[in-house]
Image (cartoon, rainbow, N blue to C red; front, top):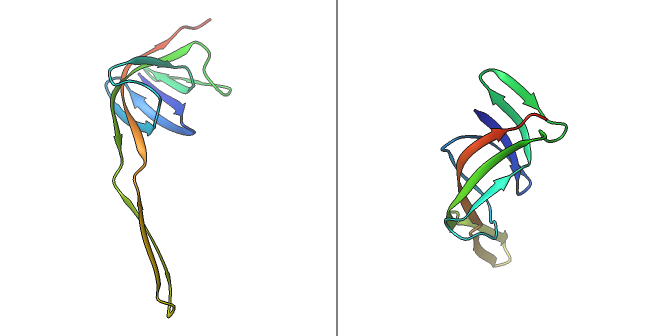
Length: 106
């Protein structure tokens, strides 16, 4: 079973057992939650497309880790002015493990 979910303003294509990194969520490591923003669902060749979400579709996930991405360097320079600024940024992310994808047609 395949699903396209929306979280943190982005869309992710997921299958059962996958690990995905999403924008930081306020959750503890090991906690479980449900994502009901399912935009598309595919099961054995049958495709359900939401308008905008598929009613009755739920993806159960568990929080595997809370970490930060690799450093992104920001460098500003003005030529001939002796102006240089170097900065870095590490975006916090939550790693989710996809548990089960369920769909109850109503």
